Length: 357
Image (cartoon, rainbow, N blue to C red):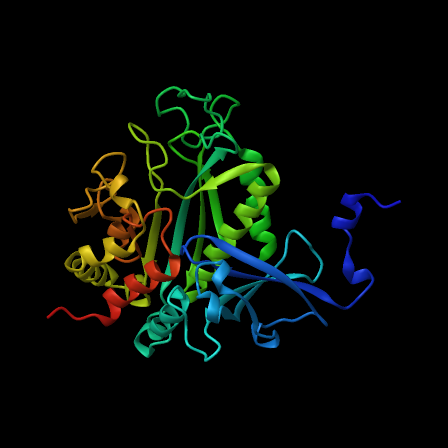
């Protein structure tokens, strides 16, 4: 008799050409992820080969009950590390039955910006540093922390090893491999300053693909924490007090920045970002004011400043970029719960398409 694990791990490609496609989308809060699966008659290699689908938007906070149908448009496909074989994950965005993007569809607007000829010519590269916190399920307290109490002060935990310093590594490594299997351009992981907090990096990825890859990486992480019985938090300041918050530092470059003379292009781009500081902060994640306080490797939320190798700045330029006179810069303002479609397209629009009055 087959055991449950035997059925879960069954390789369907040995028995049928049909595959399972898990359609994934962003829910009504702008951070919650939703998904449901359907059978596809044969393996596919492009989202254009997949049918549109629909769901009950009144149950996700994205449509009224009297007109609840929301349409899923497949946009990007990834290999499914949970089901294996030819099965896939499908990143979708959401539209009304009349074909208009619903208000929570941030991908549609971003895709327009990334398809602008001036942006296409500049080949925008992004590297997204996603910090997150693992919480104990029943008490919503960081993994490894004594219930109702606190560990020792920060210092020993960043990139640390050891049972008393690193909590949740099995989840982190499982996620790393799942991302590589899926085809996400994950470039690394590390333990963060606050115990129970970790980071993974996606990129370099070009244009809209950075947002697609980060959302699917988040989906994989939440599925893995579900299996492990651990709660995943993207709160930018999960623990008040003398503890680091969680951000989503966004590394960015254009073709002009990567070529000779790029450092001057970078400085002009940073100047533009400074002029639109308030607009960017408003779009960089809920609760960010609890994190951007001028301490714990952040700049104050009301202050815009940049510097070379300065982790207390809004924008950090690396030593290598300064030395070589070209490269990239890091926007350190986005919160861990930011929408990558919003942040990447906004940085692109400000630096490439916006002209100060």
